[in-house]
Image (cartoon, rainbow, N blue to C red; front, side):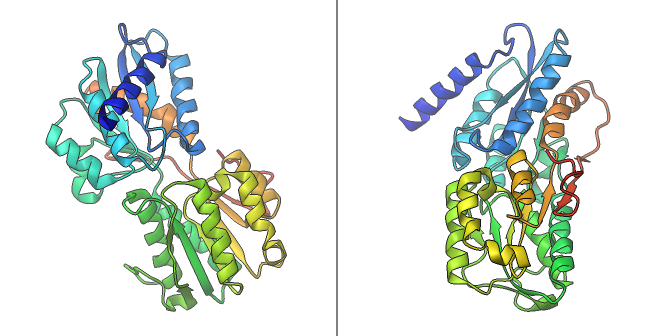
Length: 329
């Protein structure tokens, strides 16, 4: 029953999208969840491309499961798209990279597949033509570099991650731990480089803003001497009212920097949080650029043009000192 309802919902979404299905070939972008404002920036880039390329014979179509926690739903949406004769190529941000890869190996799609925002695991890279998005390991390195600058003596830290199987988030965590420790391949900080991950961390949000805020509140209560909390993705800040309530509990510590918050992404509410002193660093991706460039990359692939196996879209490093001039988005 759930599968039939999901397929009906997916079809209804496609029909309501405004894409010119009968006339255009569809360039689909499938994200982890429509409930995440980060992905809405990808949608805005996709729609800008549509506005500039009317009559090209192609339409950019943005979709995904209603909830970022619905890994199976995302896989089902891709399966549905693979059955449509008017879908020319698909760009996927896999929530569960191994699960998505398993389905694609079984389906053996005849249309080009690329990844966007999040990549497949290295052993599954052959399933896609290219990856368009952030250098996630480098993003983790930047998290750590800023934290070390703020807290050169080290201390205790909690990392907040997303989905256990999200390859992009795990790459950021690896970059963070490697840089803080000064060693490669550290799975948990136990004093290396002066940093120790506290008991109960990392915590996993499953991309849910409410859970992310509850985890932060619980961590602050249980660990009054915590040195740093790192949002490896921006989940808690995507619910600005709840995030404000959580950080109200520790504002004195944030002001004197006895507690430091380093976070991922630079969406407008996150930049407001930075301005208000509710974080110290925001390392931002460029989701609008991802959504805007993806259709052109897919067309290049379809036309047989050479496309690099990895296309990075860059990072923005925003601090309380440069917040007024740092371009986020």
